[in-house]
Amino acid sequence: MDAMGLGRFIAIEGGEGAGKSTQARLLAEALSLRGIACKVTREPGGTPGAEAIRSLLLDPPGEGWEPESEALLFAAARADHVARLIRPALARGDWVICDRFVDSSRAYQGAAGALGDEAVVALHAIGSSGLLPDLTLVLSVSPEGAARRLAARDGSHADAIGGRPAEYHAQVDAAFRAFAAADPERFALVDGDGPVEAVHARIMAALERLC
Ligand code: T5A
Image (cartoon, rainbow, N blue to C red; front, side, top):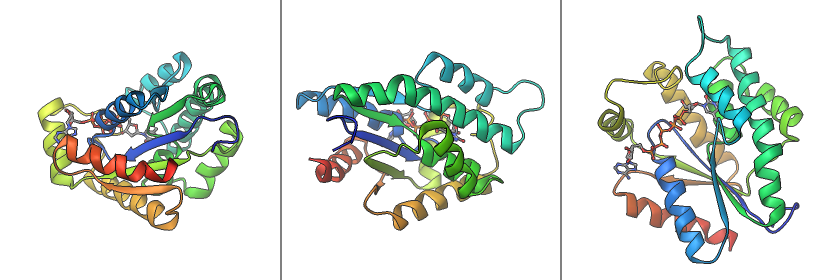
């Protein structure tokens, strides 16, 4: 149980096009049918301030951000999101399902980017008092499968971070797997390949530990 109330905090993580948003929605529907009040939210974003920062990050002005500025902007967006949406929802007893959270910063800015894990964790301690999810589901999808899904949805359009080279995204995927292996109590690695309903069933099975 979360120390702030009865609510549980679930994050869904993974690379581009892993199916996080789709599965967040299905999970909320399944929990609602069980009488659990859920708040589905996303990062970067979730509050007006954090959504404004999202635009700056994904569609940057000028020549884009240096790695340090990028990490600070993600941490600032998260601090607003945690203070104004996530903590109040958990305190009310709602469950929060968050499409990406701090482990995205650890994987993208920390591991694939230049910052390293310690710096990202330190920013999270300052910005959000180090809040961690009760459970972090990492959706693991083959690069070919994810590319097919994104091509079908977005064509050749990618945002400033999604459009980074394949090696960057391979490092992101490797980092998520390493986090899950290092902390099996907080993480569950879920096979994200296959039909939407099959992935949803795997997520529901992974959730048993919270019930
Ligand atoms: N970022 C974010 C950082 O660098 N640091 C951070 O700290 C944070 C929080 C966010 C970007 O910011 C970076 C990571 C990202 O680059 P975003 O637009 O939120 O940008 O990007 P994503 O999180 O990658 O979101 P996507 O929408 O691209 O991917 P999802 O949510 O994983 O996938 P989803 O559910 O939208 O599905 C993609 C498509 O596939 C279909 C869906 O219908 C959709 O069309 N689909 C399936 N098709 C077949 N079989 C399945 N099982 C399917 N599941 C979904």
